[in-house]
Image 1 (tube, rainbow, N blue to C red):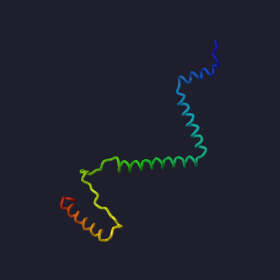
Image 2 (cartoon, one colour):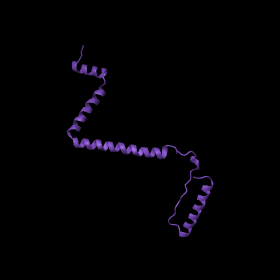
Image 3 (cartoon, helix red, strand yellow):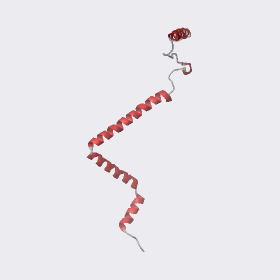
Image 4 (spheres, helix red, strand yellow):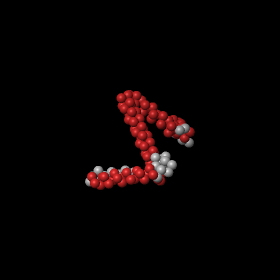
Length: 115
């Protein structure tokens, strides 16, 4: 009967009865922290870059969440319209007509119970 090396048998049993991935993770973390401790300038820059990246990600998500994902806070959202459209390249006569049209639209809006 052959049993083999007692040390390798102990290691195989240890591998089955423990969490080797957890010990590997702990060993890798200690190695990373030891390496970062040797280069404090790089460590500070790396932490700052990660912090700025997280903050920018949060800001972009906040803007997109507010602009695209959340519904509008107005009670009657279907009644909102775009009131002003400008064409600066239009001739002066057309711009005067647009101003008169806008004035009429303002009057109609006020008559309909606007602000």
